[in-house]
View 1 (tube, rainbow, N blue to C red):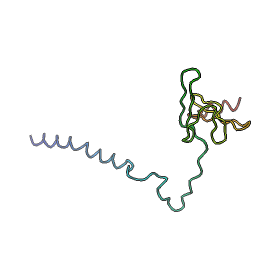
View 2: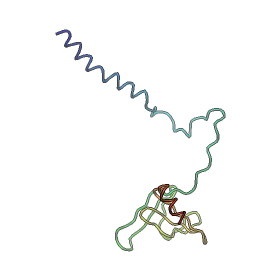
View 3: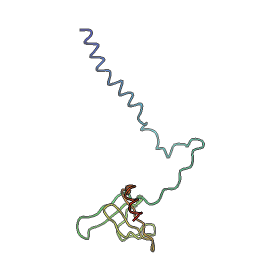
View 4: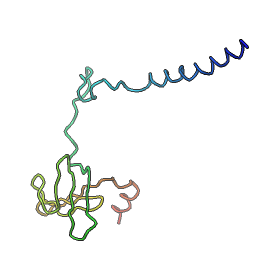
Length: 122
């Protein structure tokens, strides 16, 4: 009987020991974001943002329905202007910006490296 009780206690306490190890590996949710933490000595300054980022797209299924996108946190409609560029087209996965003769395509999902290489070689 005593052996049975000891085995049952061991079986019940074993998951608690494992859980403690997993909890030690997770980040502390009360810590500020890494960008607000003081940098270590010799750590480089963070660079400027990489450019406009397409974050979301909303395209109505109805013909002539609205086409809206969120670019770097700002909501824009097809045909409107964003930071001096005309929002020429809002597609399901991309937005086309035009500044004069220059076109810039922002994509929700980057092209796979193999597909991008094939396109450039053609």
